[in-house]
Image 1 (cartoon, helix red, strand yellow):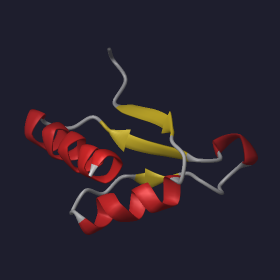
Image 2 (image 1 turned 45 degrees about the horizontal axis):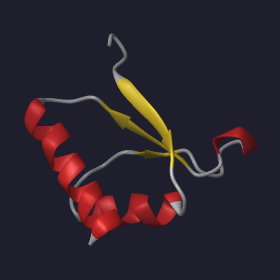
Image 3 (image 1 turned 45 degrees about the vertical axis):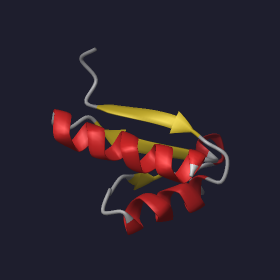
Length: 64
């Protein structure tokens, strides 16, 4: 892909955003910015290490 970010919709987006932030992963919370962006988060594609950190933190939040 040539995109430099991914937009995804996830239930409880703001809670997920806050959980990622607590784990040192900063992404963009678009929830509440526009009705069509309800429950949407945007993550920038980074280095392999940054992407792995994001995925691990997201899994921890969603799976426990």
